[in-house]
Image (cartoon, rainbow, N blue to C red; front, side, top):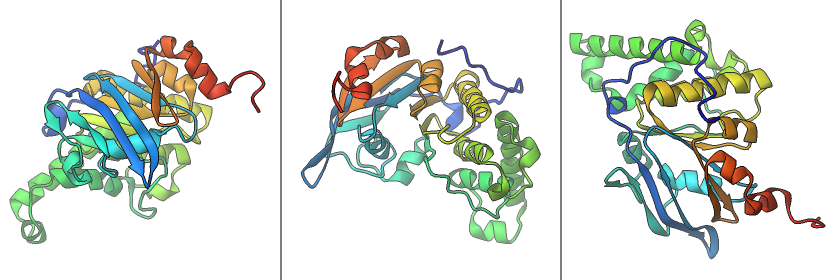
Length: 279
């Protein structure tokens, strides 16, 4: 079931030389609570993302999924509880420091420079891995030129992996919506993450685009061993991709388990459909 979706490309993409070359650590969310001016958005939520797995976080609108993602990526600070990447406590760290530990994120809303080429958009994902300074780059020193060439080669490999090799010179904003979402995913992969946070990666796509994107996500897990945390409303994609599912409702965890276990859980059915006779 979870392994049934396979990568749409047979081209293998090896892990990079930075964070992606290291084994994916466990991501442990332990009793995380988030309050805003007396409103509890998350209430003691706990789950563990096992290394190299796809872990879906689902729930009705307003369940706390986005708040959870914002805590994991450092946008929000937890009121209490902790988040760990392996042995590293990342609770309260700034987003750039969390990214530096190998945690990359995509967002629900596309944020690509519309006139920049796909290649240049992907190059933005290499920023944290760039070692050449401004002076060396400006003077076109050999070390900076070598690094730039390696970044371009890596971008080409990642573009091939996600199915964007023929679009590298095109303006990102000129691509169909589904491909723009793939550019967002590819840009996150260009960071060489160990953990990838995907916020509604197939939202708004056609059926064919959803199938292609799901295949790429499965390939990221299976070929690269990257752990993936997935927030998605498309239950068909969730049930095909996820190794484990955590269900939130009104900020609380109401169910956790395999896709089959969660799908048949009465609390989950009630959260999505409501009780009989409820308007």
